[in-house]
Length: 304
Image (tube, rainbow, N blue to C red; front, side, top):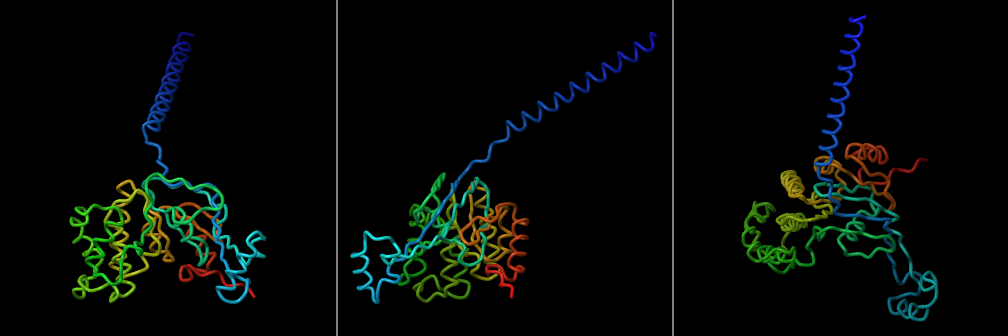
């Protein structure tokens, strides 16, 4: 009887220790979760619709006739007034967080560039809301760069347009030139930009934009320009921007660039968000939809 009581007491003590250990482990897990910082949203798109309105369709021949018809039919429905609407983005919702690199993929005309312009504040939304933490910067300082000025002058002008001070532009000038590689085959920096190839101009624009740390950087097809060494430099720079607590959006038809650079992908198709998830998972579905990585950006062939 005494042996039975002793064994029962040992079992109760063991059970109590196991329960105490589980309770301690659970509390430790809860404290770890509480100590981990919550992801910080940088961009929130809430049921966003973007609509283009094209004037002059079906309203008569010539710009003057079309304008006169629009004035006369101003109070009539849009179609009767010769206005065509294009629904570019339809009911798109997502949240981007600090430190993420997000790829935007989809066949041509799916609304990827339109969505980036809306996030940058360059296009109004028809319905829904876009919220941003910080100032989004759309890669492409095309409006600031002038073809008749030299590359050197455009580096200064573009840097100021991206929000850098004159001192910052001077400090980063050589870094921008080296990164772009425009002087690798001669002294192109002192030549007017009208003498540059489209690839050289695109590389210089990316180099200027990437010289500054951004809250939200929106990159539209920039990695499609230049040779492989420039693309590798660009991918490294995007990873550095992420490390500095920024958020990067990358539009590209190169699945390899998306796979090498991004940890999350948004797939837009005909203006609708078809899929949002980890890079490999979304790209696998997209490549199956398009018929393989070599058909990225092209709509799937219609079955006969």
